[in-house]
Length: 139
Image (cartoon, rainbow, N blue to C red; front, side, top):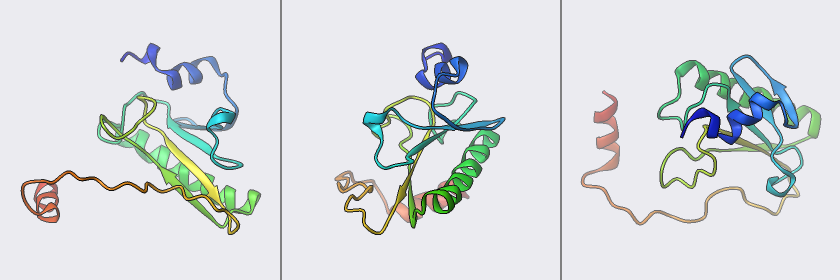
């Protein structure tokens, strides 16, 4: 997918979004009303096009996570949220809806009856013990 075909790149280029914050390397904006999970639900997106955390430039990823943190604090102070859920799906078979790295930052309150956490479990098995395989890949 080229950058020109990316809906988030197009949004940033056109400026046509409900902006919450526009920083040098990352931006935050409200999703379309039909996609909002809670009042103040916000998307955080790096300006540089990448599909997921796997191919993100470290600077773009850092800027995005920094904005996620600042936004989470703002949700507590400005909206009275008592918690936040940060959701991300990256890459094929993850359920990623837009092929541009993004984080959903969803404020939560004590009276929420919704759960913003996956309820399904993978049935996939791997050859070997996952902890060992991951530790070896990181060394």
